[in-house]
Image 1 (tube, chains in turn cyan, red):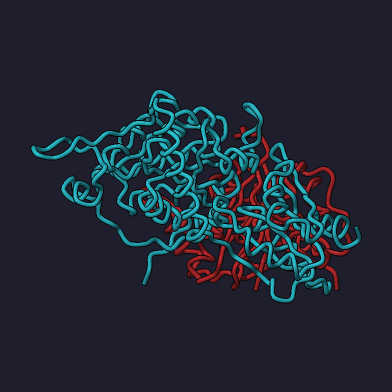
Image 2 (cartoon, rainbow over the protein chains, first blue to last red):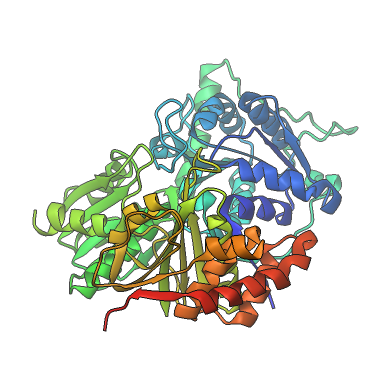
Length: 360
Length: 184
């Protein structure tokens, strides 16, 4: 029988990192995700698997430690919450430019600025449109349960190495702080240096005799070569769009009205959908799991079948722009949001759907 | 079965741990569970509340505005959550420090003098388990054997010697739950 535990989302992420065979975690505490580093420090993974856990002197230091470890082919992660993630953006842009794999967790809190420590989804743009400077994308996963917080860690590492690209888990204060049942998976072994050398011919593991130099850099001053590098990155993002789109659809088969929401908002929408269905309203829910690449195709298909779409986000309307691009004017798309740390209730969402879409 | 519960009181009263122990009890019984705290800078003396859901099926929203049961341990929480109990639902409260009592007539209202009992028995730290016992008497959704397993899972090993005292407190709470206003 599998081991079941009651865990906070933040704790589940930390345990999953150890189990996924991560080599290192570098971070700096910030609410509402400090349990990640607290759990790792208490768990002493260096005694379990040899995994390094280090509290850096700042977020900037942490992301550059990630950059260094990733360049050596190590499975490395960092975590923070919104203001801390902003501090990491320069490093993230460098890591994306240098095509290195790593995992970044953002347990989003309300902004802008220091904002509030309460839950929010206002970092959608930052996560999906680049965040730092330059033309790059992260692969972004949005968990909606504590189990997904756990499961997405291994997935994120695998995708990061498949594409040599940073992967972000975009969570929020609700999923980070809540406790749910978690099925704990197996312990994967950390790779040995020999395995890394064999699997990742790009990793800077120390030049051996007769071996070509391996160079990790995000600098290329020759515009022709830099353009070529950009085209290579774009081809990689296109491949992600073709192969990595993930979503969950609930009751979409006969739906007349569609809710679109990710993360904790999707959980709230699921309840709103149930309440509406109990009143005879044919409501469906589409939950993007990858926010980049975005499930545009399935949304475009659904837009031909439904009378209207409401996106629900804990922000002033960010994902709604991607929904509108996907739907391409086929059907009315409206947005309902609460922000600043306020969380919409299921009844509130149902009322918004009735006012903005069904009655509107 | 789905039971949607809000537990609310002062920080330091054991609101969050009561919720966690109940959730762990449900988990040991094979139920789906969620535990969503109001987190923030408030600590001891401030207000604290947690939404706990136990269900036979996958749980949708961990955030709710209407509850099957409200377990209330101070005046502010009573003022805030009395209106959030679903019609026909349960409001269980400790009258200690309450000056404005519940007024609704479409819900079942019970009281549990847990603070008084905890002071009388000298077991101040099991106050929250007395309250939990009263709830489990009124809504026996988790079996006692599973509560005991849940306690064992929630408490760190060094506190396992306290499990019998906590179970006694739950049983005491079961005896002490008193109806205030029960709808037909």
